[in-house]
Image (cartoon, rainbow, N blue to C red; front, side, top):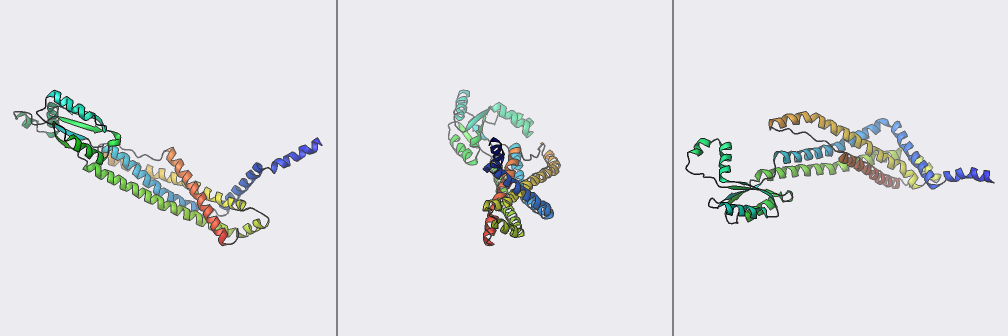
Length: 321
């Protein structure tokens, strides 16, 4: 009796849920790989089309990412330049600068005395000899207000300008943010274009995967009918097509990442030549590991969802399921 029970235990284990589920998964993946081998040319074309559809928004994102970094590197956030009244004493000047520092939007205040502003003007203007002919220093003391990171917005800076100019002892407050506004608008435009391209390309990826799954269903229509006649469940029938969509999305994403790195490598030398003209060194950054993993996961999920929708739809249309 002990020998008989030992012989029956492996059969019971094989018919358990988990081993049976593993066998179904292996069967589904074998069908996916066998279908790829039988239709290798059509599979490659599908993967290439999907990869190109993924590359376009990826390159657009890289352009926006590097343009945004270049904007912060070449054009820092504008500061408020506060011109102080010439009649202020040193104690009144220190008190005024201290009051400006108390603003919650202010990170720091750099004070330049009248003598320091005169030296700066001589250094950058080239009129040092003409300035020396004057009887007195015509330049006022200046306080350069550096805003905090969360206050680096045109609306907040203009509000600060309005408040500071009303302080006693302040002659004028200047904020040259015209270039900053244009640069922000330009980067926002690139970001909007990248998102628009990404949305259209995700729709294109879904349509391509859905169409390939639809063709696979019609090619295996008779096989599906036989599987239903012998009692195969809907999940067992759908699983190979779902895995096929995931496979196409995953492989296409990997190919798209390779093509994106090739694009970065090709234009990096050109960007270095252009940045050297502006007197700076700017390197192109590619995708980091988090961004690459996100693209792969997103493409795989889109492939699975597209295959699920297409399979459900066309199985009902053909009255198989």
